[in-house]
Image (cartoon, rainbow over the protein chains, first blue to last red):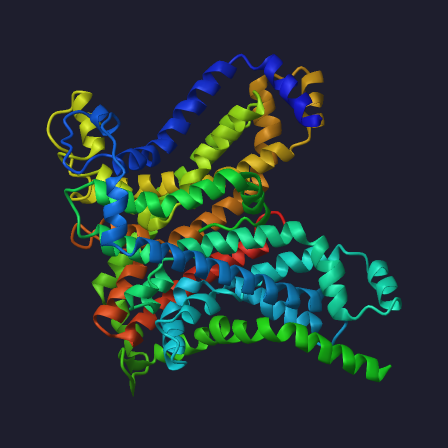
Amino acid sequence: MSQTKNTLLQRNRDPYLRIKILIGVILAGVFLFPIIWMLFVSVKPQDMSITAPLNWFTPPYTLSNYASVMGESDVLLWLFNSAFVGFATTVITLIVTSLAAFAISKIKFRYRRAIFLFFLAGMMVPGEATIIPLFEIVKSMNLLDSYTALILPMTASPIGVIILKSFFDGVPDELMESAKIDGCSHWRLYWNIVLPLAKPAMAAIAIFTFIGSWNNFLWPFLAIVSEELYTLPIGIPSFNSTYSTTYMLPMTVNAIASLPVIIAFLIFEKQIVKGVSFTGIKG
Amino acid sequence: MKNQALRNDILAGMFLLPFFLIYVVFTIFPIFKGLQMSFFDWSLIEKGEFAGFSQYTALFTDPDFWQSLWNTTLFVILSTPGMILLALVLALLANINVGSKLRTFLRGSYFIPSILSVSVISYIAIFMLQPYSGIVNNLLNSFGLEGQVYWLANPVLAWVSIVGVTLWWTVGFNFILFLTSLQDIPDSYYEAAEIDGATRWQMFKDVTLPQLIPISRVIFLLQVLASFKVFAQILLITDGGPGTATRPLIQYIYEMGFEQYDLGYAAAMSYVLFFILLIFSVIQIRSGGQGRMI
């Protein structure tokens, strides 16, 4: 309601509205251009010669690149690995962070504040700067080159605990007390009362955890040797770096890697945007 | 009563345990492990002799270390202003309310590169920027520019390319943060300004901009932190080249650790990066934390 009023207010008084729309749309074109170009190249026949910029976009089109890329590379396996690692990382992160946040927010125990500060300190540890010792630790646990190595170290997210704790704090203690009187255990309080109320925060954490895992490059780059464990960010360069003059196959691999996330984005755009503004996390 | 307290301690311990274990092993322990490693000759295969401060003294006289640290800093200096100003301009453009369809389209267009994998955006960039066959040179030629621009072979142009690509790829995050705070400014502020007879420019200068200062500070610090970690897109697009002209610190750390097998030296350099990032994190957390939740 106030949004529409704002609209009217601005529309009535903005003499530059048309210019702004024009610039906004042109910039949108600039942002979308490389992605659209990639998609067009992926459906161009491999023997096409390009003589003018427009040739990139004009017919003939073919889907044969998709068939040859799926035959020549393991892109579908990388896609599966990325999805599986992203999904597992997200689920484990949600479970362990919400359990910890519940204890800190809703159970009165000794050293509660100290433990919370200890978790808070983790926000200041930059993962990139501790990646060398992390490699040694994972190596000494004999976990290198495994799904576990890709998933587990990425799940202890202090920011997740902090966000969920502040969300759980908003659940009134009276609600907790009355449930307790009804004979509800802490586990049931956690599962049946607090978690359902924290859905928006859980969704935000799920989104940034998944995007972070999906795009993670440095850690899989170090921790994975076997090609069958490659995720997309590692697999794509291993395939694309062998091409320099053929455009079509590398862009087809790119397209296969991107289409699922583009589609997911179009479906969940609202939640994703909310998740970003909610957490302020960036890649 | 005492029994109840003990029961709570045990209960809390059970809730905390899974997170605590993972956190201690993979987040906290590496800090100390890294410190230990930086004081030893540590190869990829095994731990070697105690080396004292020799890794650190070697680092101070290693021109490659200083060059890569400077390259990372240069990237921060070159990218941060654009990351903030462009994000603000995009947010102002996407905030003009002319039907939610156009708004959703603009918002989606500016943000969508951010969700693509670094490998995808890097190879789009590499192929678009190629001499002779790349579409960027095609376009420049059709606009009348003669000859070829070697985007990735010249140090200055390589930096322009890296910063430009990164801007296109990740400015969407900052854009969303600006857009959300623009939409959070209460309408009553604008109405009051209107009653006072303020012009549009005055409204922007005296209402909009001051309201954006807190989020700008958050964005600035998050951006500096993120940019100091620059690595993957440079590795993939220029591989640190031409020569080592664009090689960032993390790439040098990687090369020393995993190509020269000198993990002790790599750990010592990581510690320098650790402290640089720590300083910015502390400033960031003290100045109001991560985004809007805390």
